[in-house]
Length: 283
Image: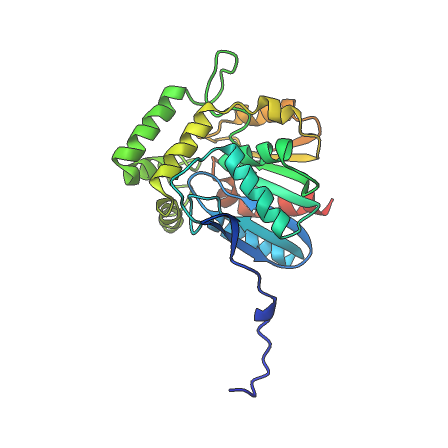
């Protein structure tokens, strides 16, 4: 056995967990070599949602770093505060420890909200490009001066259901995740449901509160780095109106519509999604 000369490259592997504070370690997927791309997942998923992005991006000579937010997936799940500031600061601590500079930062859904907060408040050269995919930006729920997307009462009901029957909440959520109930096959649906169930109930609820209550319009106005907005035209969770609001509110931004997709554009139009990420990263 000692004479085996096959190179596994295991010595080049990187830490799977990074400590962001006492008793809080975040799960990280860190693969490939080259210009960094950082991926932030949506509610209530984990970095595993990007399974069909990792290989394509690594094969195009990028270093791809997926961060699972506290409370979700394989990351630690403290029974504490969950809001955009907490998550954005966690991202900063991870990128500081990895010495990441000049990255393309990608946020999906709630992850889009969090990366907007990160770029407006914590970015110190870590990210020089931003991608907002199906993002819950600038506000996920309606206001007197913001008539878009969901009424706040709908999110109140989701929070209530989380504490009464979380599996049913996730099953119902899955029905509106894609353009139609059959846009994603049953196997993909089961895989996503398993990821969602791995989140803590507390984090699931508290992040719904953050989604319901946080107004990112002031943050959005501070974004000056080049921004790519990718959004499904048939999105029932973050309506296409939100994409148009992002385009209007971010000075250096480009909007690309995914005509066939609902919220899960990264799975419904995977080839197009990956192609647009790569093209923007290579610019």
